[in-house]
Image (cartoon, rainbow, N blue to C red):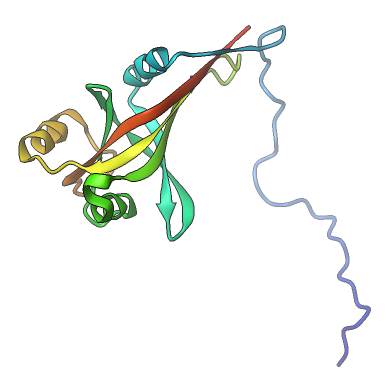
Length: 164
C-alpha cells in the first residue's frame, strides 16, 4: 500500500493543557540595564541561596538548579558522589573543570531585578572539616544523601541590574 502523496489532515482540536492567561501587567516605561562590577555581582550572589550550575554532561551543556553558599568569594554546592557534576570535578582534580553559575532575582510582574553569572573552575571539596562545615550550612532540597561538595573559584563574574 503506497502512502505517497498522502498528507495527514490538520487537527482542529486544541492541544490539551491549561488555557493561557493574559500576561501580568508590567511596570510602565522602558527597562534599563546597568552593568554590575564583579564585587557588586558577588555581593548579590552571596545574598541569595538559589542558582543554576552549568556544566558538561556527555559533551553537552547541562543545567541544574541548586542551592549554594558563598564562602570567601567561592561558590560551594553540596552534591552526591554519583552526580555528573561531582564526577567531572573529581576527574579533573586540582586542575578543576570549567563551569558557569547563574543566579538572579527578577520580579515576575515588574521585570526588575538583577542577574549574575560567575564562570570559573569547579573542584571537589576534599578537606573533611570543610565538608562537615558545608554539610551543616547547606541544606539539600532532596532526600538523597548529599555527602560531597564542590567549590567554584570564579574567574569571571558579570552581572546586570534591570531598572525602570
